[in-house]
Amino acid sequence: MAFANLDGVGDNLYPRAGNAGMDVVQVDVAFDWYPEGDGVTGVEGTLGAVATLDVKLTADRPGLQFDVGSMHVRSAMIDGTVVTVSHTDGELVLAAEQLFHRGDSHRVVVAYVGRPEPIDDGTGAEIAVGWHGLGEHSYVASEPSGASSWLVSNDHPSDKAIYRLSVTTPDHLEVVATGTLRLRQPGPRPATTTWIFEPRDPIASYLVSIAIGRFDLTEDRAPRTGVAIRHAFPEGRMAEFAPVFAATGAMIDTLSELFGPYPFEVYGVLVVDDSLGYALENQTLSLFDTDLGLNAGSATVLHELAHQWFGNSLSVARWSEIWLNEGFATYAEALWAEQRDPSYDIDEAMAEKWRNGAHLGPIGEVDRHEMFGPAVYQRGALTLHALRRTVGDDAFFALLQRWVATYRNQSVTTAQFVTMASDLAGRGLDDFFHSWLYEETMAPLPQPPFPR
Ligand code: ARG
Ligand code: ZN
Image (cartoon, rainbow, N blue to C red; front, side, top):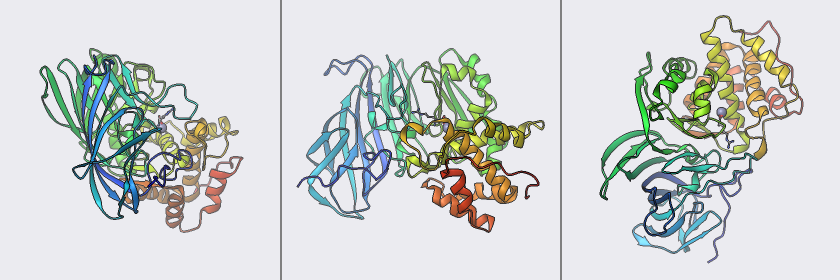
């Protein structure tokens, strides 16, 4: 039987991302990192992987389908039986002759190997996304569509899973990853070490990361909430980077007060010796390159932390609504300044942002090349400030807290936010959001007196 549907979950920007009709619940991957080649392919920097995925069908499907980039798939099993494999254009189809029933659960094992190559994300960015090899060292920056360069997954933020990652490396290398280090033990081959990481909460595939290298590690706790903090800096460079991220604990405490408890069991940053040009909010372990790591103002440090609530705990159900990530994280920068600095006038700051951004187009439904552009970030933040000055502080902050609590570990849409905002404000806000999100010209900011 021909496979009926090579399409994804139906994302309008990434039509092939993810796969319809399935919910991947847990992914357990055992990686082997061979910096000098695995002795078979002769290619340096190869990764061997055995991924075990627990999958629940949400619709009847002819075969099971996953996203996996250019890695070579060696074999696959479903519920212990070896199945046929077809792998074209990043789509992996297993047992295409069999019918899988809605509601059933299956355990899928996929063995694959190769040198992971980053993927062009179609945003127009110069640097492809996914696995970044740096000789013996490596790291991951996948947003939006790079996870399949190294993971077998249902690669869309609407399907989160627990990603348990085991990595075996030569003894002289270290590993950090999203989640918590559960075990570090001698590896199966001589002179290797195996590192096992597991997160408490599910993660969207694009926010899963591992890094292999040599690190200076720090451990700390947020002063008031006690949230565990661990940072990983390039080896020998702790003194340079630690000061840049010293306010992390205070930031966690402040944002926890504004938005509700920090959503995960641990936080920290990873600084990698590369030039990526942007920071990325990998779940529990935000990523900075050395340049940003040295020069990031507190705004960028805060921005990536704020994404743990907005973007990570609550993820976009559709990439075109990414203002729900970036607008919120950008507005959080202003909220932090407002809390920290009594001389900071948030209305003045937002008025200035408005003047600088008066030309910015609509953000409610963006294209791939607009996803990380200034409109999404700046007009997104202005939309939230305008909302706050329209409904008053009480309703606005109650909304943020309810938003975060209600959709924790889920995926969200703009329509859900509009509905919740209208509920809390006690009146329909469709016109407000229509104007701020979808109209070509940005509305003026509300002027005082503001409701409380
Ligand atoms: N989410 C990141 C941030 O807000 C930006 C990621 C940019 N991604 C990209 N492929 N250009 O800082
Ligand atoms: Zn951001």
